[in-house]
Structures are given as structure tokens and as C-alpha cells.
Amino acid sequence: MTMNNPIQPADRLQEVSEYYFSRKLKEVAQLNAEGKDIISLAIGSPDMPPSEKTVEKLCEVAHDANAHGYQPTMGTPELREAMADFYQRWYGVPLDPKTEIQPLIGSKEGILHVTLAFVNPGDEVLVPNPGYPTYTSLSKILGAKVVNYNLREDNGWQPDFEELERMDLSRVKLMWTNYPNMPTGGNARRETYERLVAFAQKHQIVVVNDNPYSFILNRHPQSLLQVPGAKDCCIEFNSMSKSHNMPGWRVGMCASNPTFISWILKIKSNIDSGTFRGMQLAAAEALRNSAEWHEQANIQTYSHRRAVAEEIMTTLGCSYDKEQVGMFLWGRIPESYANCEELTERVLHEARVFITPGFIFGSNGNRYIRISLCAKEEKIKQALDRIKAIIQ
Image (cartoon, rainbow, N blue to C red; front, top):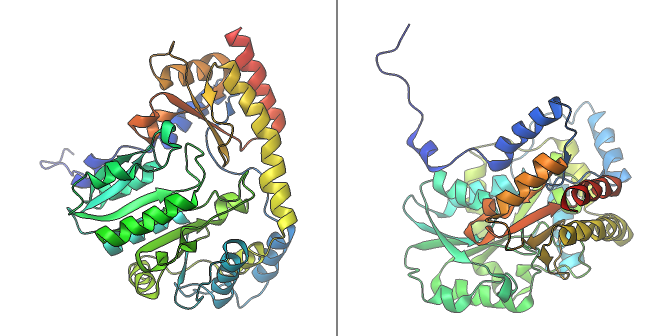
């Protein structure tokens, strides 16, 4: 039967498209079904397991018959205390576990909650270009106006504060930052953090720093909250997905002053009912991982993989900054290609290797590609051999 008035989706769906990886992975799956055996160096999903003690704790709690009920939305005391200890141990930042920490079901969820807590429809949000696409898509879904600010290679992928000061900031409520930066690998800088805090205070803008990569290929992790006064006007996300090899566990956190945390909790408590107790207690165990565990998992393993990824970049004729950190390698494509997708599509269909075109992160990524280090070293070497075969 044909309906006289066909059902239409909400208008907000016109503001966004299907996430690039959601769409592209369908194509990759079809190519694999055809026997093409695609090597994926695209997505940043760690392929290594969490620490052994983390898994043991999850199993232990799962066997407890009393551990399967609803959990508090604000998180268990054990998890909040472990998160506070983690910040004190690694960043030297004191946090009150009762009032200055909110566990999250991953940082992506936190982007939603913070936007709902601070931004009215029509308000403006500063989003980096290039930057994580979810900052843009969720802002649009929620009716905020996205105002991009530029990150450029010649400025170390740091914000251009002089350019920011020339902008009309009267309707800006939030500014998203992400250091160490994804996708560019630009590292956190104390000077940048200090200027961000001063910028937030001057313009009464809440700066939200997304900080999941500070342990990957980086022996000097930093936090925005190390800057005096940051807690009064800033929020920081952290996540266990990258640094603790727990992407599917969906455990993250935000830290800020008690007022901001209470606003975020008010939103969150109306959306979800908390994470399984076993995952929370296992995450608390993971946060106690030794420095040696992080050295092996986050430095040595990724260093070996990075060396091969650099060979891929060189083979493709791309230039890159050897000082970048994180679990990706970001490189500028040769002038012989019209755009980054021309190169990534050639590599996908001729070499059967899936790498990420930089345009998905914003217009400033149009001349760049990104290689993920989240594949076994042997696979990355195999990808290198395939790419050499089509380039030579």
C-alpha cells in the first residue's frame, strides 16, 4: 500500500552524511568478498589486547552473581579514584574523584554530552580544520553552528591565535582541541595549552581538549589541566581506547571543575544507565598499568610499525614530519596527484591497501593521507611490498 504522506526523516539528517569509514568499510568488505584480500591501514583501532591483569579482573567480576545490576551513571568510586590517581601519577594533576571526574562510555559519547550541556541551538562552536569529524557532525546534529579554525603544517598544527582573535567570537560557546593531534600527529605544547587557557578566560569560551593519544609514541604526556586556572574554564577528555588497548570496551572520562561536571552528569543521567561493573573495575585495574607496560605497548611496538609506515610514505613520494606522535602517520601527497583521494583510491584498487584520505578531516587535509599503525608489523610490511609493486 502506498502512503499518501510518506514518512520523512528529521531535518537534522540533512546536516550530516554517513560517517566515511562506515560507508567505505562496506566497499572494502565487498572487495574482500571478491577475494581481493584488502590490508587495512585506515582505522585507529588497537589490535593488541589490554594488560593481563585487566582481563583477569573483568573475568573475576563477571563471575560475581551480584555484579550484573545497573550501575551509577557517575561511575563506581573505584573507577573515579583510579582515574584521579592516573592523572596525578602521569600528569601531576590533582583531581577530586567525587566531583571533578565523570567516567564516559568513550569520548565520542562525551562530545555529545558536553555539547548538550553547554550549547544552545544556533550557538557557535570552534572546530579544528583538520580535525576529528565527530566534532563537526554532532555539533550540526544538535543545531550548533560550526566555525572552523585553521591548523597548518607550517605552524606545527597548533592554533593560530592571532587568526582566532580576528574572528567574531561573540556567539562561540565551545572550542574543541585535540592534542596530541589526530590526524596530524602534532604534539601537545605547554605554550599552546597556556594560550588556550588565556583565550578561554578572555572570551568566556569553554575549551574542551580531547587527549586520548598522549601515551602513543610519546614519553612526555601532557594535560591541558596542568596549566593553572585551566580547570575553571576547560574540560579534558581522556580515553582508554588507544593508550590501554581497549577500544571496544568504551571507557573514557572527562575532568573539569565540579560545576561543569555536574552539568554533564545531568545530561548523561538522562541518556544512559552506566557501564557494566566488571568493565569499570577492570578499567580501574588497567589505569594502574606499569610504566614498563606502556613502554612496551605504546612506544616499542608502535615504533617498529612506524618505521615501516614511513617507508610506505617515502615509496608514495609523500613528505612527513618525523617528530609527530600518536598511532597514525600523516603525510603530504606529491603534487602529481590532483587530490588525496586520487592517491588513496589508486592504492586501494591497485595495491589492495586501504589508507585514509585527509579530506575527511577537513579542507586543510586535502593534500594529505593518514596511515594507521594499528596492524601487525608483518601486515604493514606486506602492504609496503604491494605498494612498491604498483609504484615502481
